Length: 288
Image 1: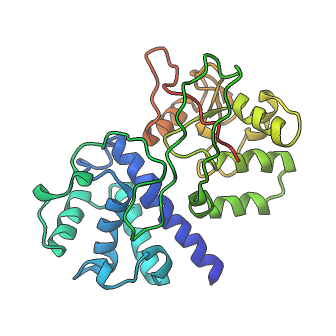
Image 2 (image 1 turned 135 degrees about the vertical axis):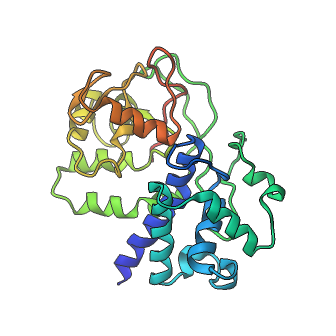
């Protein structure tokens, strides 16, 4: 019962903190309109409709909700969130109902729920309502290197306790698998790359060489080949050193059999490419 509850909590956290905000920021057509973009806004909408029903969820469940919901409440919240992701529930209708429960109208919603994605600001900690588990810290600032293989200045370590929460089920699946230790190590590192970011084979091999044992980008790529836990364990977030698509599903490059699927997954999470097919922004390197 305890283990099943943790898996359910991890799934709920992933949906409202990662999946729904990524779809909203990408304006995924699964919803005709995305009235909100922030994680705690999605949590409000889902919990008011799945748990509160006739009153705001805060009158039913003690905060933080993820720790105090019953199994039935967690299941109801998770199922509704999954319906939103699948386009089987209309987000604007759910949002209107949530606001009505709270005696508010959409036109007077706070700036955090404005109908366009919020501009990125520099924070040292995540911004989220006190009702919920804190979001991950913003990635460290720094200019991208000219080449992914070039030397870079060390950056401050950013602690991400939410990795253990949102990826708990996937991390356990990796640990319990019969994969080789190197493949387990590589797939575990993938779980640290947040949605909306990408890394490279070279960046991962650099980290493993520095902290564990000598390896290379090709070995990392081979370790991720035929990832049995995709896409939950996000090998699609790994690109080539030159910013091109790299491999996916055992095939390489833009002409690969699964290239479009990899593009779709990245686009849904907010990763963008330029007209030359090169990814925008620096790679994620803050592996622990």
